[in-house]
Picture 1 (cartoon, rainbow, N blue to C red):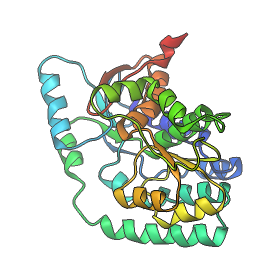
Picture 2 (picture 1 turned 180 degrees about the vertical axis):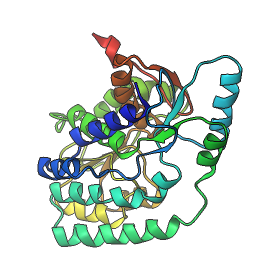
Picture 3 (picture 1 turned 135 degrees about the horizontal axis):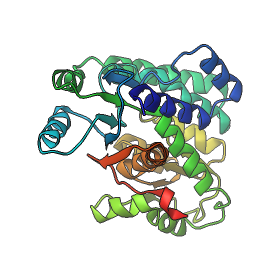
Length: 299
């Protein structure tokens, strides 16, 4: 595959799994705009042929140097695909937060509240993005290693995966639901490293009940959203990771949560993407944080 083909396949997968309306997706596609500015080709020629792809969840200068050393040791690597954004991808992460706003509204939050909270976290994240995130780009450029990040498209895949996974599980107990999450191959592999899924339990409600899947949208949500979700009747939050203030607010508002694990969830999305790339003849080399599991082989 060409480098640009890998990138475009990632964007297309993101659109196919986007929680926004088909009309919005079609407009994005027809205007040839990137609907996911946190997902970009950082270095490398678009027409370069890629056969061997190093895939990681995170990227920093040390990973780029590792790939360079592996190449020197005779391992064929034509490029790096990372999930979490870097460089211009990270500087533009605020542009995908609107996905959270759409998800909140789909789950009963009033438009005026969703917009207010969206603007709040947009401003906060914009102010936080004032550091130097160009190190991996510089290293990859100097070493002539193609590098791209595909973030929100993969998170969209994860969102759909867990929406399907929890369908018809409303009456299941929180403990039984956690047991089933732990059996997801990526979650099982992460657990073996000590990074287990876990629950926050509202002991007044033992069942999953009405749930809210929160796997896409770039950044941790504002604390206030959990109070509003509780008011709409949500019983359980399904997420990959939350900060300590988020968790405290969930507990304060008597919400249960199943926190499935950051690296495990990201690996689920990347695996689904990589399975498609393998069908196109790409050899996948697993890197930092990536728990490789081939669903192609399930059948």
